[in-house]
Length: 190
Image (tube, rainbow, N blue to C red):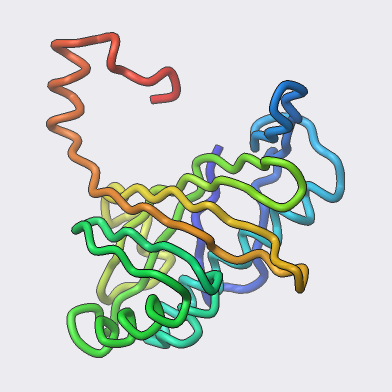
């Protein structure tokens, strides 16, 4: 039940069956059950936020990318670098967009979206950074090898922004070995 982001291909869309269900114990909402209209609106706004970030990445625009983050955000890259604040995140990414990441696109596939209260959510994505090609070809270019967990918050201006992101490179062979030799390590949703 996922929906791959495809920046620059039209209006953001929600998967037809993506809905949410409140957990009365902690006020979480998952993207797998029934929801109310405000939650669908918030989910669409969060999806649009991540799509804006992916579009800024594709455009090589560090300023626009950094604007997707809160003033005190934390970005932990998959190599372990930690950036603080939207300005620093944007500045550092501009240097990357001008060199190592020049001409690349960020591809995101939301696997889980959970709300905590009315102004915070956690979004788990699979993704990758690709050079060349088109969004239409992405599904034919293999599996998405990176995972990211985003904490997003609604700020005083009513806009959703990224407060924290942690990126991890997936290691399928190590995962498979762990699952084979220690079956109890296999997550339920795998």
